[in-house]
Image (cartoon, rainbow, N blue to C red; front, side, top):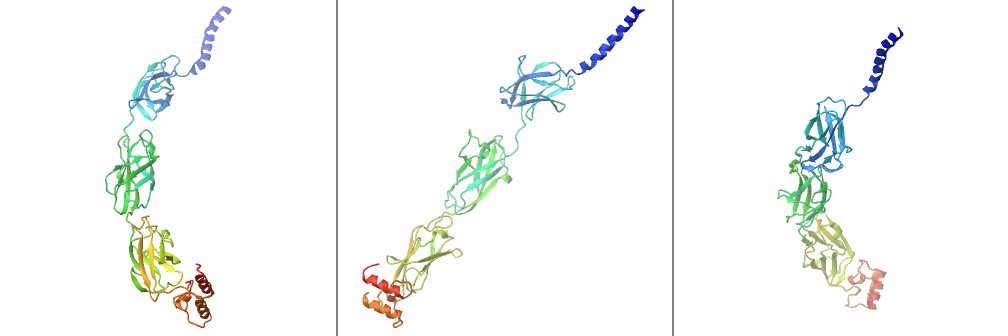
Length: 397
């Protein structure tokens, strides 16, 4: 009986052992399908660093990074490969990708297989036109009617092959990169210069467009634009007061010059707008009225009677665009009355001690003021004029 019981227990032990072994076999990972081969993108070997991915049903199930240009994985037993694994049904279609672009080839999943599969990727055609934004464009305005502009621009793409500009409705012209990389525009991050053909004075708008390597050109609505002004004409003197050659001009007059256009006020000074009696400068101040384009020289004191004065405008005076007067401009006029010798207080034609006495009497209110008594020509007769007469007599300035 004991022998029979042993034989009855043997099948039960075997079944128990099999049941215990089932969970261990359930943890065995799925068997992958390995791939290697070449990869070309748009006809060129894929660059080092390109990531090759495999997807089944839209789910990524393997990837490898290229370390040798144009080659993913290797054929050797110990070479890395693109392993495709997961809960994948045998025969399921595997799709391959380089970056975000799908390869032209697919393959049916076969667990345990090692397959050489050469992949080719043809990215979709680039049909997006680049757009351009002008960052800087100088100068504005310009006093040169063949201006050279220097600026920078940015673009939405990095594969720009050319940049062009147009002024107004003129022809498109090439915008030359001042510093390009391998002939490319490097996202237009470099400087660009161009010289505009001769322009007449006036306001203009410049338009800039770009063309990428796929021959897409910026749409008209997206042209970059900027405006500038050309003023290359030298200003002129329209009128003066007193007029050239005028006589009998009041000794209290101011001297004015009106220009043909708006001027740069900072260039109109006592150095660029002068008044002289012969070779003697007249002291005074200068102002400019931007509304009437008129400059005024106001003498510090009354002018001498019967004296010819010459006013001069130098070429240091410029218009708002920087254009100077084409040439120095001068005109003369003569004041009313007889010519007066400063310090000749008694009017006898010479300056001597008698004139000191005359000035003293005028200061004391004993005699009426005479033109020559204002020896220092400051508009007043006082003790300073006595000192001036004494210096004249002594031959001092």
